[in-house]
Image (cartoon, rainbow, N blue to C red; front, side):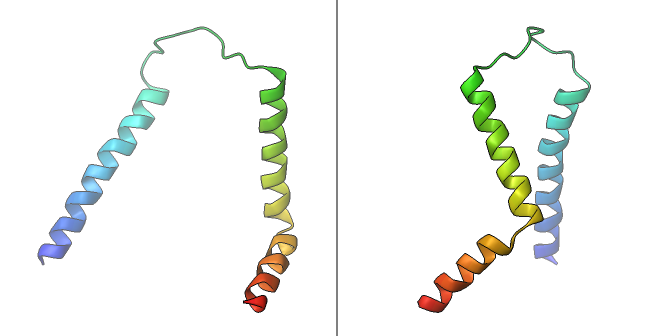
Length: 74
C-alpha cells in the first residue's frame, strides 16, 4: 500500500514538472522575440543528424546486423 502511495506521489510530481514545461512553451509570452539564428555548419550538422536518424529508423537492418555480429563474436 505504501509503495502505491509513493508511486502516485512521484507521478504527480513528475506530471507537475512536465506540464509546467508545456505551459511555458505554449501559453506564456516569450521573454525574447528575436529570431533564432545559427551558422551554416550547425544547420548542416543538424540536418545530417536528422537524416541519419530517419534513415536508421526506416532501415534498421544495417545497425541490427552489425550489433548481432558483434554479440556473436563475444
